[in-house]
Length: 151
Image 1 (cartoon, one colour):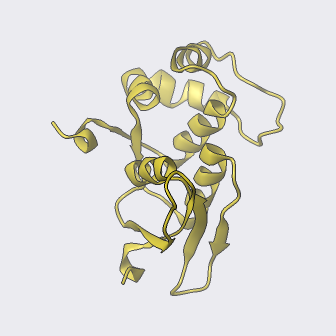
Image 2: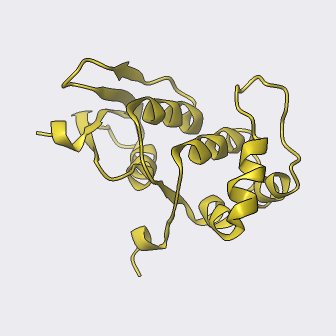
């Protein structure tokens, strides 16, 4: 079984909730426990209602939720704005969003590890194009575009 067939598929919204919670620095075990017991932040600073994760994916599909946390996941369907939001939540940086018809893209600096992680979670239909290659462990610049726009 290849790595891509082992990863569960989750919604873009569940992925955003999960990455926002990961940014709190919790271990996999703590994140799973807190979501399953609905012991989640409610201060509203993030703009997310984490209870949706506890009463949705974690409650309805607990095996999928645990696998997404521990083994990784692929997003079922990405939108351009969702990709921008995912990069912001997962990597803590604000990528550039271009919504010009025919050249829609998200542009962001990515380290080699971040590139690999983004490539694993993107849904089908998206391509990561190199704008400026990374220098060793230092970030490169990339554009994420619909596959229909790829050269």
